[in-house]
Length: 181
Image (cartoon, rainbow, N blue to C red; front, side, top):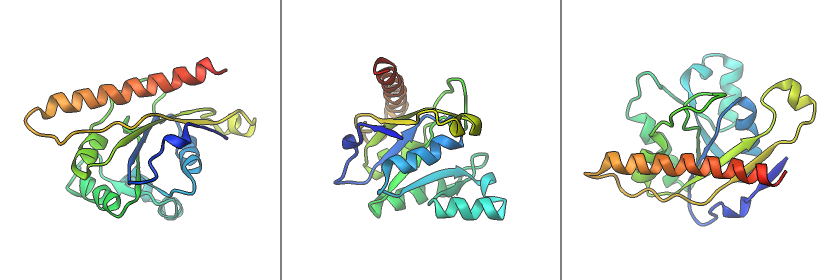
């Protein structure tokens, strides 16, 4: 697997890594790309209903999130992890998607409250087992830190700006790969 710009990852503070999400493969590849840093991934709670998958997810440091009825734990768990100097992984599209989806705001809220940077990353590579077994190249590209200010009276404007920065970073990182082919 090819990892581009790993040196851009902070080594002096916790951070949130946000990544594009097209299949389960990108989750595994992102975890491998950041190794030896363990990533604590937010995952929809429905994935934890099967014992085998639940155990796998827990071994991968994932924690469940109720997307339909988000409660305080949606913020509390990742903020607690970040305060323990850990890395939190979030897929801001909220679900696997082959087309562009509007990004959810959770990473922005968490980064603001925990006062940590967001690091954008893109996965480029196979999205099916067939392509993976066909040994198609897998690449993770990380981008520059995005600092989210404290959310205050201009909360909506800050969220809109931060989401635009993340989206633009994703596009720029994908273009970086395209230019290097």
